[in-house]
Length: 379
Image (cartoon, rainbow, N blue to C red; front, side, top):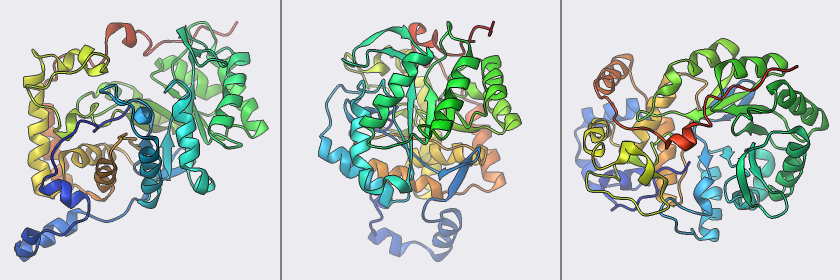
């Protein structure tokens, strides 16, 4: 999901994110400059999701055909962001057939075409989408015969001969996960898919899938605003050697500081129906943002990169995929790869965050019903 697309003014930390020198920096005491240098490195390092090597920060492209505010971004501008992300060290790009539907895959395919072999392309199947019209039908569909058609369509839209990482977007309660894993193995044998993963699945379904055919990565929502994966998902991934990819790592823009107690959302904006952003809950939840602002001042970055750096500090096999439709925000997000916390700093930040009780649900009940679903047994 896209993260920091709420417009805001360009302040001192925004300019720092763009790498512009400020007179105040030259005037800073030498000791402060040295401390900042020690806690901030440059460039993006590499991490492994299972055996798949990717940049430590990825780019989600979900909203590159429709932003949260329901506006339609400029396609040339989105292509420039994708290219600039690659120039800034990003090699991990995330899409799905459901985004658009189909159109986001076309944008990504065009955007990476000149450097396709140097990046990792991810997409997802699993929703019930008509392959001819792109119309989204009710429910999910992971029937193997349907997924084969989906993958063939993806390859055309992405302008590629293989999908580096293909996720099941949501578990189908009518299709045994062994059938899905078997299909992934077959597609890998054919060279159409190199790795596969799962999103928002039930615990036993993950274990059954991995036993049938190795799962490379799990993608779930995870951020300082939503820490649900800490209940069992992260420990299961560590046990099984599976990488973890947090979607919405900036809390749909909330953790960037772009939302305040007076913010209200337009019709069609998913945040309007997430009760964590309701007028009743928003003011108390903003305590998280105040923590991030203080840490942003200490590290001389914006709040968003602090939230991403916190995720990176949890495990070396976690790779967040913040999304945006604004160039400055993409560059700002990549700075997270260079932020370092000392053990004492991380303990301090964790203690501050643990004292905040987030109010409200992350998604409407009708959407949450598709999470942590267990696939039926294989008969």
